[in-house]
Length: 388
Image 1 (cartoon, rainbow, N blue to C red):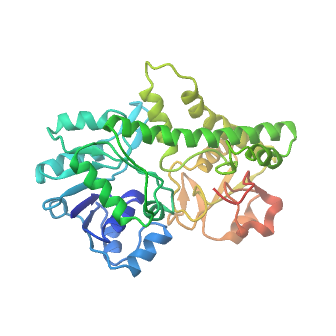
Image 2: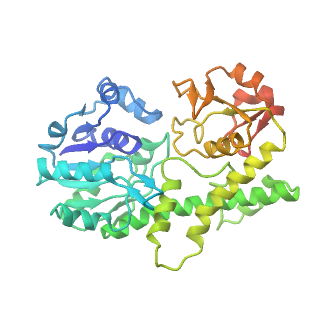
């Protein structure tokens, strides 16, 4: 097959590498540096499997800035451009997806278009009518930062919002390129597929919020959070995974997806979905209050990223803590090796760990690191398990 993939973030690049093992793939992006890196078999994102496959595998993969070159002869066009939640409109900003859909339909109206970007429920049905194209489907992805290709090679499930032969062929392309066999595969309507994506991520956000509130309770009551979580997790119905307290949920998906799902609940009775969104704000308020109790003059921030082995700090929870601390007039010093700039939201950035340790009265770390072992008396974290 000839496959075009628009967008080379975690989703697009991992799919480009996965599918180019057995198909001709053209990866489209608007950033020249990323295109050049991919063509030089270098990964523009932090993902061990992507880096390994780019350098070691014989991939039929070409990155490009040219829409026509990417789309013209493609059997399938995959859309994996970013969608951000617009708080003013109370809805996802899907302009990047619309732009690709418009160009793809004009350049190659016979191609099957698969939307991988996260979108509101009902978007695909509207797009089919808007572009007079019945060959537009939605297929959600379920990937972790830093493990995107791994999660495509060993997927938990494949879900396609379509039941036609083209939809089934696409599912087969994904399963044939994966290492995992007998992958659960589900063909549903596009709106059901969109719902599966949003409800899955909102459930994960709910679980993060639950254990964060457990941690808040234990801290206020003077109890041992870890003892409580260990005991709760021994129930097999609850389990011992995804239970590590943090400063709040963040990253590419959970903040925007929970808000989008809540927006989709307009005129639908609900209590839980709204509470999940509110819980994240409450947690950040509490964490900031705990840090301020130390009465620091300067607070150091160890990494803006959400977790270890990631270069993503979009919507990271630590940023919410920073804003609250700075609002109280406290100086903030950021240590972030992945950031080239010397300032982040008007706070100085250092690439020197020694400087961070010397100048900070308190160092906040969403996830602990051996880098901080020698200054544990300064570190504030809620990371109890060194994972997640």
